[in-house]
Amino acid sequence: MNVKIAIAQIDITFGNPQKNRKKVQQWIEMASLQSPDIIVFPELWDTGYDLSRLEEIADSNGESSIKLLQQLAKKHKVHIVGGSIANIQENGIKNTLIVIDDKGNLVKEYSKLHLFQLMNEHKYLIPGNDDGLFTLMNFPFAAFICYDIRFPEWMRKHVLQGAKALFVVAEWPSARLDHWRSLLITRAIENQCFVIACNRVGSDPNNEFAGQSLIINPWGEVIAEGKDKEELIIQEINLSDVETIRQRIPIFTDRRPEYYN
Image (cartoon, rainbow, N blue to C red; front, side, top):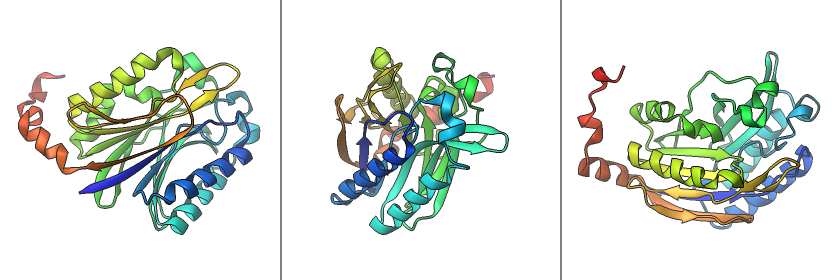
């Protein structure tokens, strides 16, 4: 039950989808040389937080970015948790995470449920209303976007529905780096599952981003961590560790949800 993860901790060019797509292609080609099972990218890697120009620079239904990832996944025979992209639909613009399997199939689209007002997301984006559950390699996973990690009940819901690992894609600022690490480690401990979190590096006109991407095991131990520069973080995880740790401290059988409402 081993799964080899590659986190692409990249910088993002503000408001330049064409340049960002070229970079993502280069990083997939570079990562594929190490034969990972899954490659992970950060939040809004196509446009960055150039929210006021999304109607101009994002493409309809994210088609260009999705097509690119499908082609690369199929070519390199790798699964891709493709971060998230600016996704223009008839009713508005969503921040949408995409998952592609190694045959190039679109497995999942999850649009960010919780919009972060501190970065004005609520002014330019509409929230999603679907869950983050998906299956790759016959394993149940779930994925979330940045601010979602501050809502433990949302993430717990997916674990109760079977997710063995939680993927998080983000543009998390350096100013709140301590929150990033603390929240992710807590989500791993309380859900007794792996957390695989990809954050961007670099800066835009308003923010500096922390990097420090993490892979955390179900015991809450950080087993891989990035720094504050562009890098590829490679780590193999064993999903059987989830059940081993849940048997050691059986919080899911000891839950008393009838009292939680």
